[in-house]
Length: 395
Ligand code: PLP
Image 1 (spheres, rainbow, N blue to C red):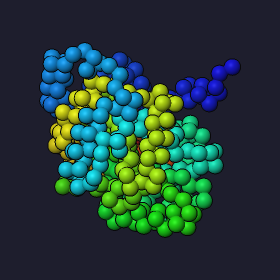
Image 2: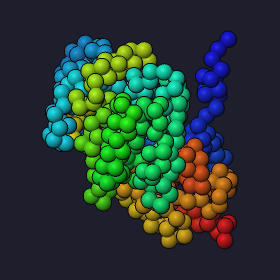
Image 3: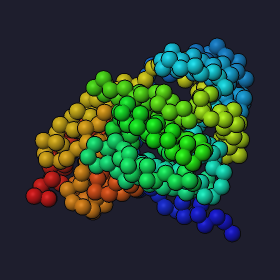
Image 4: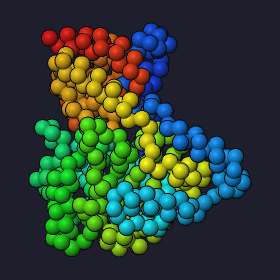
């Protein structure tokens, strides 16, 4: 007898993975250059030079046990100290090494944070549509309940009245993600201020802390001079889940961290529970070499300007064709209104032109599609004819 839930999870691929695999098969039939795969969020802009330089330097100058051994379970002290210094200089905060827990990317950070906070099966975590689909899987797997706030399709910020309604005596936390996958929207300071004051008021009403989990793998991928604000500045009970998968184009290296500032209520207990959750889930001693690599690359990112070229090219052309697009301020996704109510059917129609785009139903936003533009710009140019044909189908 095996776990039915885990079997079902393993047996069913996500819509994104399904399309990605379909694209590979279709390439064999019609040729790779004729398939326009906008399905997956795998960074195409190469990792910056500092990554290779750091790796070479570490490999050449360090003894094997300095770069390949287990670190402390929560991560190497010098690395965590370096991250604290960098954050303090960048965001004018007062962090220490012991506010950081090194992990394997944002997915592990989220699972650990959720596991650490979940006390019993009635605990609820609120997610705001459109959201990263795996949140549902992670929350359910920690034995907690998912509560969804519907999307604000006018400007893709947060409908505060609906968020307020979603908060109950069982609420344990809220997950936010800005810059957002899939909408590309960056939450404004006004939005963050409103979240902060709502959560403070509700924490008082229910006489318990409400945790804000800020999932930030796209923090540095922003455009037009927009900045993703430092979320703990707006609300003390904030836990940051960070990853270098996107900012340094290192998704395969599985490296990131959880940040629990001292201002979090009972921060020492929360940090200890995070250590316990990391232990229980087997996410201890994040990849040792890459802990040291990212320390040497603090403040560096992949060349965001290259994503910006793709962003502008797609947004301008698709808008010209008559598609209704959300103008992305960050991340590398374009969120577009489907030309019919049923986005799943719309994406099936797109497949007729070998155009692989993702219906946003799994992101909690039916009627929209996600176009991932971390792709080769030439593919974008070649794809315009297919986008036009799709548009013509609905005339
Ligand atoms: N959160 C969001 C919003 C994402 O888009 C992703 C990956 O695409 C993740 C978390 C997981 O990232 P990681 O590769 O760091 O585990």
